Image 1 (spheres, rainbow, N blue to C red):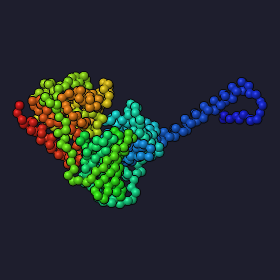
Image 2: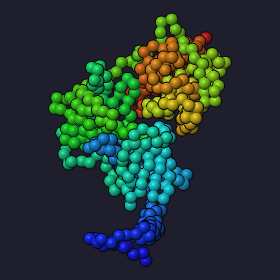
Image 3: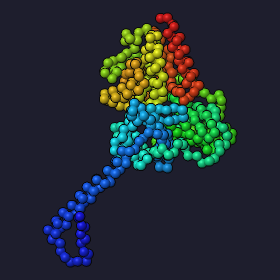
Image 4: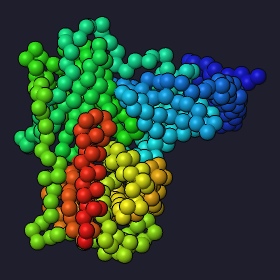
Length: 437
């Protein structure tokens, strides 16, 4: 056993250099023994406990997006191909997250769709960790998770003041005074609330939450950034609220209106005067240049989608267009995905587009055009005017001319708006296929 030596106080004894050396050696020996004891007893017991841990089950997570602001979300872990796999739950949607990798007392889930990852430490039957970029750049978001709670938002016990289901005219406020018009779609069952906000750029996807008296709370998370909306309904059919985020809040207000609607999505982006088509020659991940003038696309209806792997609405569009193309390609149809990605180095682009391709089983061509910036779109597609949104879908007829440009995307969370889009899209394609050259 190593004994700790106390140096007597109030003594005039002069400690020699030899005494100091002996004392230091004994102290170092004691510290080494304590460290060895810690390694053999402390972490080992934690790792042993974690080795018995199973992530399988339903979880409630909480993001701390800024001091005092927590955003809840729900996820589940199930066995998939004999390995644990995480899915995010938002209303009726279960969105694929990624494989759960456990090493000692840590869990890692790579959210490849958005180049993010969840990194957790196992603490008994709870998790504490961060959401961060896979390359560790940027500022991570702290979060925790447990499986003892099955709810999303904690209820205060207040009964909803009314059934606030319906359609609302919404105005998102901007600091420059240019408010953005939107449509709020809400469905309430008891105190449970689901819905989305439909904007000309796309929808807010599946939001889930509660009505607490007159107050409402909604959130969503699929692996990108957590979304959080809160507000209140008034007696006169109006509402007010805010989108809360770490980057700053965006206020909104609105009123109930069964006829609430957005402008026609096919009348927002168009060609410049004098243009009938779009000319481009852009590389795929292998460096091969692809153009509308290639033999592959001649005398065919071609769908161009301006997209990006980072974009949640582009994810919804890809989940529709990829299987649709597989089913319809033999009818004389082609698709080109024109990508604008956050990084343009070849390794990143190959990784991002390959993941996107594999996730949605994409069989059509993908090209890289630039970064997700309107000026980059203007440079790569100079014939396009008033580009607004990722995604934007451009339909080319058999003559190589632009027949329609559709701004934004209304995904499955919008219900009838989505089914109406699918019907209109198919009608347009059918008409163009049947039109003779």
